[in-house]
Structure formats: C-alpha cells, structure tokens
Image (cartoon, rainbow, N blue to C red; front, side, top):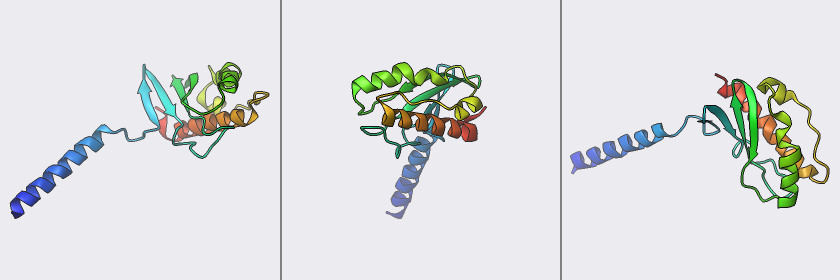
Amino acid sequence: MKKTFFWKSGLCLAAAMFFMSLCPADAVISEEDGMTVINTTTLAEDVEGYAGTTPLKIYIKKGKIEKIEGLKNMETPKYWALIKRDLLGKWNGLAVKKAAEQKVDVVTGATFTSEAVIENVKRGLNHYNKKGKK
C-alpha cells in the first residue's frame, strides 16, 4: 500500500511539473508572428475606463511599437470606436522607451476610457522594459 501511495504521488508530482513547464514564465509577455506581445489584462486589472477594464495587446518588433489592439471590454461600442480610431495608433512606430514616455491627449467624449487605455499602455511598456527586452 505504501509503495502504491508513493508511486501515485510521484506520478502526480511529475505530471504537475510537466504541465507547469508548458506554461510561459511570464503570462504577460508572449511571442506572436515574430513580435513580442504584451497583454495588459493582469498588469492593469485595477485600471478602469468608463465601463470597466480596458485590456490591450501591445505588439513590439525590433524595439518599436507595431500596433496596439483592444481586447474584450465593456465600453460602449460608439466610444470604443473613437478610442480605436483616435488613440490606439498614437504609439505606432515609436521606440518602446520613447513610447513609454509619450504624452498622449485623451479623446474628447471618451475621457475615462482614454485615461485607462493610456495607463494600460504605460504599464505594458514599463513591464516590457523591465522583463521582456531581448
């Protein structure tokens, strides 16, 4: 009975270690289509726009921002469309360090959401500067 218990315990431990090794070391930073991607979902879960959190994916290639995409959120579609059109592209083409320091104006009519998006970008780029640079 003791051998079976230890054998099963060892097998469970080995399986757990295997599955943990499949998880990325930093769930915020990943690779996608040759770019480093920063997902701000957990980095800025305390940052809220008008209707809740505004998580983003920040795509970085060769030390520059390629694009920023909004992830699922509860913002009003009309105002989120303004954010996508007038705000998310403000960092495109900038070096990460410069982008992290970039002063960006909010979108009129979507102030709370704009402020949340700007904070998401700031946190994402700061995280990249600390942990993700290659």
